[in-house]
Image (cartoon, rainbow, N blue to C red):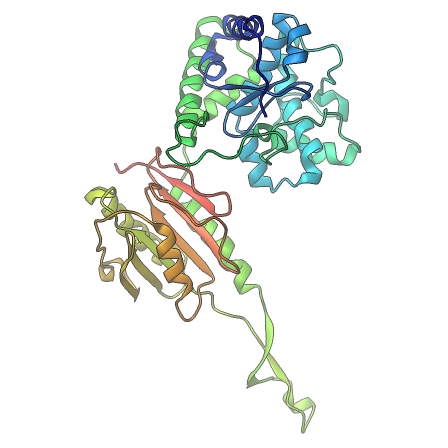
Length: 402
């Protein structure tokens, strides 16, 4: 349950935000985006992966404004640098939280800590603490931190740092629930883009932005990803897992049967993976998106090399389902609402059962609550503003048409 702060404490928090925004104007869009929730007994300031800030009112009441503002800057950096999403990609578990938090803190503190005033009882983590040079990424620090032994960070870390929900955090907001304060993945992406532009402009104007933020902004603004290659790589990764599952079978005799007359020996069998592509054909897709779907199916047929694909056309139901050898054989029929869960369910009912399901969608869809058992799901999100795919799926964001 959230506490009820005094008017004085609310004013102090507002002053701390202004203090932070004045000293780090390029972070203002991040600092003012997060709703504040009060958590007595938390002991610190934390953020969840939905950009909600949790503040212990008792600690905040005794901290100077610049200390509270410094803690807000630290949380803004965790959110800005996508530490929760990067932790997801690494598969961070509950046992890794302390190590990843140390690594994420080191990435922030390596050139920012001298500009902040943190609480005296805070354990400030620096790359020097585990024998690494400054200016590296959290992923690099993480590998070394685990070798060093016990983590140094305080345990009160929010999911905005490591991605794993913590006691006291509000549940994930429901779609369309405006009463539950949070920042959506689309909004977060826009805020990060705005912050990256402001960091780059401030660096050009004054040259006073910490180097780590400059590197982050340059990567955000100028990185170009070959998404066709990335999508094919994700699918190949799933397929290789299936192809690697070698087992014995009695369907054909072993080549070594002659060495043991009268004994039937099994032969090794390497299964051929079954790939099903679920194509979003809802009204929100439009002709250009549907053309892009066809282009992606053609690209998958060429680059993945699995001997044909089963392709389903789906809006809220399956309208066409057939195996194709080329994109010209695909019939994209639909035009209604959107439910890619219906396509995934239909794909699971096919025989042979799929090993990999690829979903090509604009992301404007509900998803199943959990990953289907025994099947890898890869989501190709069409357009840079497409809502994020569920965490249980591998996803690749595909550039806008044209």
